[in-house]
Length: 437
Image: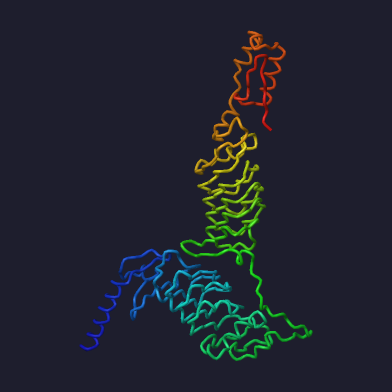
């Protein structure tokens, strides 16, 4: 009985030592101190085994990788989470990664650049997911890939799978895709991808029609033009691409979007409707002249909007109504026209005091150039000096060189138009009234 007790004691000591040197990370990557509580055991855990660093984030209900995970790990365990799509550059910061375990998620789509940067990866586990198709392009960044597990996925064996199957069947790729089988169409069900006749993937159907081979894949416009970065937060970088419009196919999970330095003149309605998680939108240094109502529809959680260095004169009524949680609005270096059309912008800012804004300076007309727009609006809405109007009529307008009838006409025009006091200019023989367009 002494020997088993000694063995048990050694195991307990080893477990305690591992607990002291293994920092643990929450689902958001926050490090916990070493310890043995069950709550901590359910969080991401970093540990070293055989001299290599592991990050274990299994069973965490994660939908993507987190921004503050350590980037010097060699092995990343993400099994049994809720990841659905593998986006371009999703793992590009883990340049030392040797193995990536993504089995038992809900993955139904892998973008071609999802594994960009993983030049050291040798093992990729994607079994027990919902993949139906993929191309050989997903494998190209992983030059050292030796083991690929993709079985228990509902593969659709047609032309769209042609390039991937041909790559896996090369003699040098003997451990890529073993045991994976077709789930459809019915005539191909149960065929192993590694052993099937590749020519059958694009064979004529019952009507004699030969399906076309998707050798040239048509990518969404945004994918072919812009770059997607997952760290520190999901960022779509479309800056300085000589765009004259917002590109189509915007990804739904982007948090930051940079469209600065282009030639976009017109924002049309609902162009950002799918970007419901967007928190920062940079549209500076374009040639924006017009923003239609509902252009920002769907951006409920947008916090920062940069519209500086454009050609905006004012905002149409209702343009900003979808931005419920906006906190920062950059408006500098736009030729703001201080007339009645600028009032909506000031009205909206007045009713959203939590928004910090900069750059609201009148550029036109000349008499208000350099004024703060808020000061202009206060002057425009100032009360007319009744004592001057009535006093002038009581004492006579002779001092101004005008008649009583002329004074009444001036008072009537002022009441109807609500003109700002700076626009009442004295002349030797009367009063000149200037209206803004």
